[in-house]
Image 1: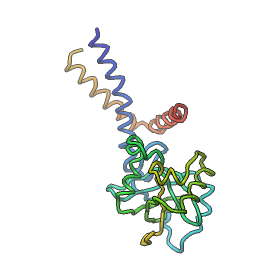
Image 2: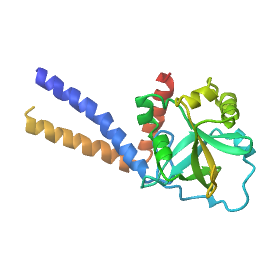
Image 3: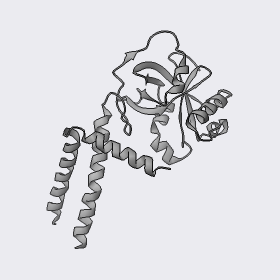
Image 4: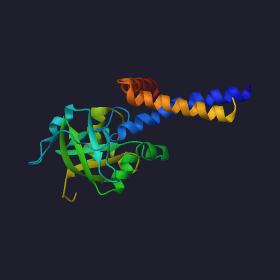
Amino acid sequence: MLRLILQLIGIAVLIPVVAYVTLRMENRNADGPSIVFPGGELVSGELYTGPEPDWGFTRDIQLVELELTNPAPPSSRLIFILESEGKLYVVSGYMGTTLGRIWKHWAVDADEGDGMAVVRIDGVRYERQIVRIREGEALDGVTAALREKYGGNSSRESVESGNLWVFELAPRGMNV
Amino acid sequence: MSNRTYLAVCLAVTVLVAGSILFVPGLSEAIEQNLLIFLSTNAS
């Protein structure tokens, strides 16, 4: 009897695990992320070319799609977006913990990768270079924008201590 | 259930669940929506 109960428990666990793995695999090559799962390369949408945009319009946008091209294959996810002093930023919290680094592994990839990124905002793709900002006065503005837009109690100190990682989405080819 | 039967059932369940998600229209979106509701309700 105990054996049968354990087998039924095994099947009950198997169903959500298979569902999760299937959904994740299904989204892996999709044109962009779903709400829950990362997606693949951002394909659709106009590729922006031209002068650096006025990023002020992103203050009214809660989530954007961010693709990292390295490590291959490209992967994309939904992410908060911030604008501060005319520059574009994304952030990743909980990075001071092992669990956070596993959960937000994209940030580790971004930090260790070649920096090539594409961000899709309102259906327009922008090629950017993702650069981690570890210290400096710019963080005061970024964390203030983060608090104002998304809440929380982030500060320059939380970035400099490594708990919150801040990345600038800089124009490609710029040394930030 | 014998081990052989149990493995066959597990395999069948795996194929059924994965196949349903992949080929039944709207099912993956529905599961994801419910997952999102669960996460937003229970997170924090």
